[in-house]
Length: 189
Picture 1 (tube, helix red, strand yellow):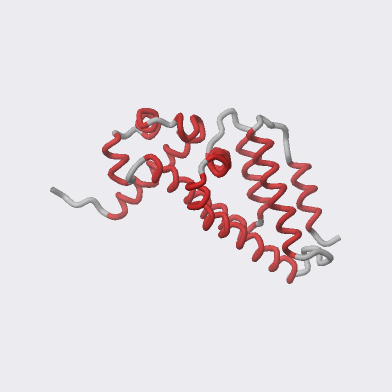
Picture 2 (cartoon, helix red, strand yellow):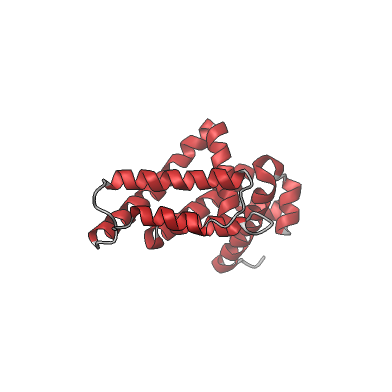
């Protein structure tokens, strides 16, 4: 039997994660049945679960992948950019990507203590990236200096959580002006 290259395995894993992300976004964790996952991804359950132990590990991989991507975006462009990306996804008729994952993560954080405990490290990585970005911004003179970094970070995190809640409740209006206001609130005047 021929060996499958690491590149092909990695490509298949990314393909599974992309399909699972869309399925979880559309149906939520409970509604993303194995049958729906198979249909969305276009692979059999054997092919899917060859790469992931079970549905829970598949969801955690999707959420972790998104958390890493979000932390990278925060580090490079700030938490407001993550909010802009989420709001732009809400403009589509179908929630996908980070937004779908974040809505499901938010729900599970409220309802599943085991998941919340597992998620704490990822949450801290995003918080750490936010604070490091704010510190760099303050050091370069872009960020206001009349408030502690912790206060500015808490403000941005509250705005982020509020946006998630707003979008979860079906809010779909253009958020550009609101996010401009959030960004200007932390900038040096």
